[in-house]
Amino acid sequence: MISKVYPQKYGPLFRVILIITVLAVVLLGTTMCSTAEPTEAPADVAEEAPIEAPEEPAEEPAEEPAEAPATGQDMGATLAIEHFSVIEGTTWSGAHDRAGQRIAEKYDNVEYVYREEVGPDLTVPYAEELISDGATIVVGNAEFMGMPLIEIAEKYPDVYFGSIIASDLTTDRNFIRLFPRQYQALYLEGLLAGALTESGNIGIVSAFPSVQVIRRQNGFILGVQDAAELLEKDISIYVKYVGDWYLPAEERDIAETLITQYDVDVITQQTDSGSPLDVAQEQGIWFIGKDMDIVGFYGWSDTDTVAVSFDTRWEVLYEHMLNEWLAGEANPETVLYLGMNDSMVLADGTEVPTVDIMNDNKVGIEAISPAALPLIADEIIQLVEQRREQMINGEWDPFQEHAFVSNGTGLELEGAPLPEAGTEVKPAGEMPTDEWLLSLFNFDLAGVEILE
Image (cartoon, rainbow, N blue to C red; front, side, top):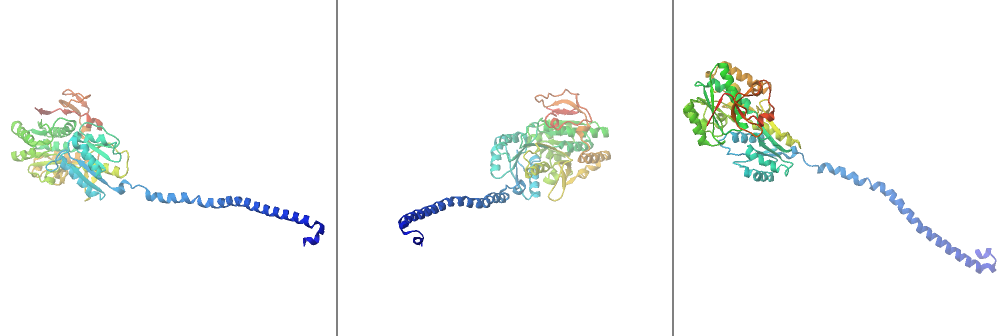
């Protein structure tokens, strides 16, 4: 076709030109194809990127809730109590042990474990052993052997540690100090003891001078003195120290001395064995119990000897610690000083204040021995009922009501010398701070005789 268009003489030249033109077209087409490919590749990436980019972050939030750590409530807790003494046959460690059992009975997700006869050298090793077995709250039930727990508080930041207060108030973020206002129930006991004595002589078998012991005895002393004033009786109170908390033989000797040499006809104790009670029963005098309802819970003696006891419910304090731990509280309350206006509802639905007078499983004025009741003046019964109700309601406190006049005896502390006898340290109507009551109330109140 082309040869027909152009003259014949130009045929060879045209063919050359045609060949060159065809080659150029082919070459141009190849070049265009090769340059088109890189322009198409970015187009592909641009289309896929919006699809792939949101897929990665969209999957991560969906997995987070499943991986979230369980809360304290979900995991439950283990309360571990290190008892300084044996449990059986003691009122102090016995009350702590009962508290642990009551906590475990109420909370399905809480276990109670313990060690007995733990001295200061064993406090930390036993605690670490208990923690390795799952303990989340570890308590030493006396100050002298509970304080070493502060040494490992930082090492185990998710564990609550606790120690009873004797006079030291050292705390840390997760090292909690605790004590009940036992003096409130002791005041009520003092009212009854003052009403019961016929000889006018009341004896206390006591452990050793300490802020804890002195403070509790002072609550009892105020009750006795109020009864004496109301009934116009002249009453002497004798205290003799044993030297430790649990020395059954020595406690027996002192109880016998108080009865035979000082004509005591009502006796109580600030020690932990049952020896003073045994002596009271043998000698036929009235006994005032401490720490537990010894007739109702232990079956020790009966209401012909035990006029009344005060019962300590450590479980109220332990429940406070437990609830904060289960709630995941990183900064729990570090000083717990709870009294009759604080309470706990037990597994069976019974509500119990931190401390109360109790005897043969009865509380309040019902706790007064049936044999002792006819010997107690009506005005004392009414006063016990009134003051108990007021303290449960948080409306009255013996340490606020009364002036503190020093007996000149007690325990000399660094920075807190003993006030001279007759010194009014605190006026009536003024409530001391918790810190002062727990760490600085180091003197006996006037009207008590400390025997050598």
